[in-house]
Amino acid sequence: MAKEIPNLVAEARAGSGKGAARQARRDGKVPGIVYGDNKDPVSIAFDFNKLLTKLRAGRFMSTLWNLQVEGQDDVRVICRGVQRDVVKDLPIHIDFMRLRRTSKVNLFIPVEFINEDTCPGLKKGGTLVTVRAEVELIVTAGDIPDHITVDLAGREIGDTIHISDIPLPEGAKPTIDRDFVIANLAAPSALRSEDSEGGEAEAEAAAD
Image (cartoon, rainbow, N blue to C red; front, side):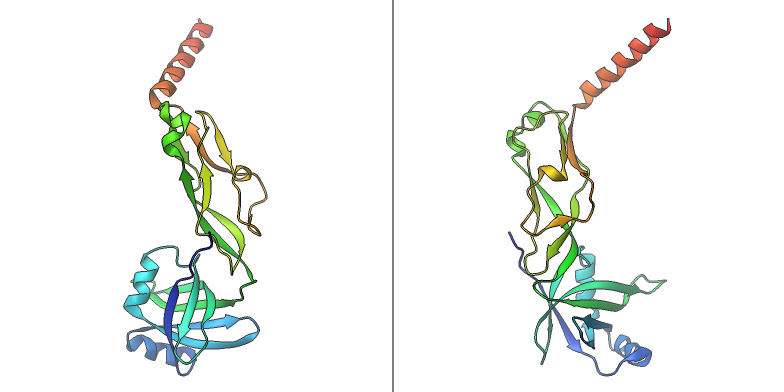
């Protein structure tokens, strides 16, 4: 269930400070820095268009990356900040933190629903209402799941699915202590409408 760690290619950047960063931007690059793991910070730079494509694809800051810089060992990193131009909203600087395989990190993990075709509640016309499409979990950097699974088999209209109902990968746990809702099976709209009208009629009768 562990996801494959995608590569992120950068190049070593000579110099540091605002002057070097401005020069990198003039060269069509996005300057960045890698820090953490009790090692010296390393200045890097990314091809602007390639980085922008990855940023726009989504989930950039919740993805563990295998950072590749020519002449250096690959290192696992997670993005900890993207500075953007206040007018154009385009990246102008990016920060990464190094992680070990055993490091614990907070990531948003997508929720996947299975057995929708055999779910009794859905077959009766109910609607699956997703409250959380992804859940923030504390996971081990070397064993990040690509999703958590909600099994809808046997679920009926009116059922509520909590985080405690979902088997989590070993070593993973939610960042929130309470037993929060992931999804629920709502009644068909026609039935909800009838219930609402019935409630109104009862209220009117009681008023009379």
